[in-house]
Length: 470
Ligand code: ADQ
Image 1 (cartoon, protein in one colour):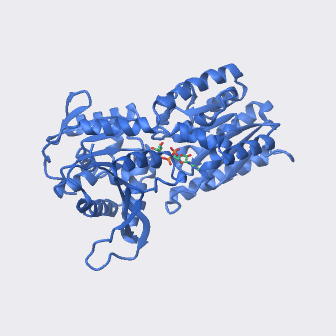
Image 2: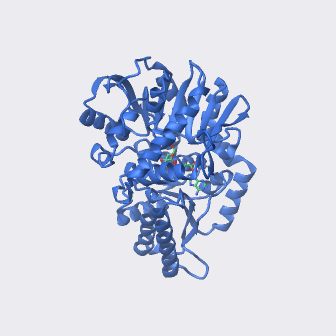
Image 3: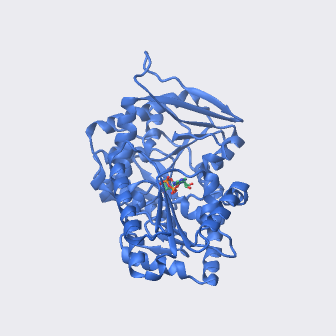
């Protein structure tokens, strides 16, 4: 394989452990090929410099080159806040009710993808393999191809892809999906998402199935498949054994020696089902009185996209639910819910997970959900905790030995949490063993290697039909 070029909205310095498993795994492949990682710097400027082109900031991280550009405030509003997070994030999570289809956003989204393409092109070498990540950059391959880029380009969607009729509600969905078909390989988190994609291109673009993962669509050949993302199990287990991980574990065990701990760790996002989770926990306390005073839920919700209004609404709803549960059920020496609106350092997460008897991972919709896998990796196999997992998380396709729940149904979710709290040691061990085997087999290195291997197998081909006008 030639040099790897990774493109994503934000980049991470793979040398820093705080960057997380994905950055570490991509960093390894980038290191081996002396690769390039390109994205937005996270900085905003009032306007583009005279001449219009944004300067590229280049930094060398060992053998890897990190290249970024700033965005103007206007582009950021339309591309990032408007289209990516105001249209694509809600619709792709099945939330048409939360989408804001302002006509100006799509123009800004396209403008920034064109800017990325123009900036990246001169940095490319002929045998580069390009891997684009996530919904911010769906049209990037088409914009690169329009400038004459011939290299292999793969795309991975980290969030779900809904069925065709939901996608078809996006004004300009045909343009967007034609853009997606300009890649050589498109990867999804789950088989369900992959099937939705196949149904869409068959029904809306008359795609012809060539067998296996190959399709003929818009006069070019496209490969598509499911590549469920994993975590770096070894790295996460090492974090659990490191001094900070152990110290966190000991502290939590001391603090909660008389009570069973339940844990939830999420970004504060409406897709994560946090109010529904609180209602299920309230139901647990109401229906199973023995759980009162004996179970405590620690919910950590890190601040996220605070400039999007749907996020402020969810923050208020969550605060009010936690307040009312503590008000109605709390005792002088027991608070049922400890809610924290902040990010916990990555090094402390494994200790928190390991000290918890139950993890509540109950999104209404999630591409994968890595917290579920991190919880499994952090457990003590001799006395493991139980994972309560939404059937609507991509992870549910793989993690069959978790207790799968419907997060919309507070009553049945409460019953599953109750079961988890009471599960005998032997059953906990059996379930955990099976789950650990699964996450080890399909870890983040497997994910990276299998995607790139598949991309390398795709055939060189003609550029295809001209890229659609908006
Ligand atoms: P996210 O929606 O951010 O990612 P998730 O996979 O749950 O969701 O978490 C990613 C990372 O963030 C994990 O390593 C987790 O530990 C960390 N994290 C989450 N909340 C945290 C908190 N409060 N404090 C500290 N760390 C926290 C998107 C998709 C997911 C998909 C990933 C990867 O929405 O479905 O699994 O990308 O593809």
